[in-house]
Length: 209
Ligand SMILES: C[S@@+](CC[C@H](N)C(=O)[O-])C[C@H]1O[C@@H](n2cnc3c(N)ncnc32)[C@H](O)[C@@H]1O
Image (cartoon, rainbow, N blue to C red):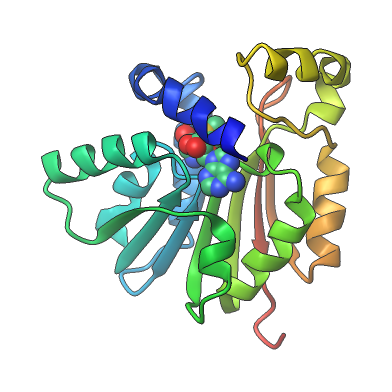
């Protein structure tokens, strides 16, 4: 865990300066997400990085609580929030399990470019389910390396040892969907821009569960 916090703290400035890799795909994901947002929505984002997506959604919701375990990422996110004069987003340096243990409930949970970085990603799906109000949605975008770049799994330990890569977990889109269903979710939207792109999913906690 410490290794990964250090990795993300170290690259935070560079990450903030990096342009969005595929702006068309990003805009499409923002547009799909927005269908699920209302002025009453209480939104929670984990692994928010430098906060760009939370700040983009802010005008369309009641409140966003966005966490990341990297203090440097949160520092940059907070600077952006202040500069944009946005008052309904709260950035916090925290880990998901700390929030999952609380009694807080949300209408929408965002997990963008994060599930494949979490060793216990299946356990995280259960935590997200518990954080959602019945009828709420989990919106995720995940690199499913098991589908397109399975060979990468052999290079990942070396990359991590050389401190040029964080922990990356290899699984397929089918395994992710199956795990979501096993956690109790129903898949509402699946979208994939093709190639090595992340898989975008909207999964709903059923209203009566
Ligand atoms: C690839 S970045 C994605 C950032 C943002 N969601 C985005 O889409 O640009 C992954 C982020 O997750 C954070 N992260 C990784 N593992 C985490 C964990 N176990 N708990 C909280 N944050 C974590 C990192 O600090 C980093 O900011």
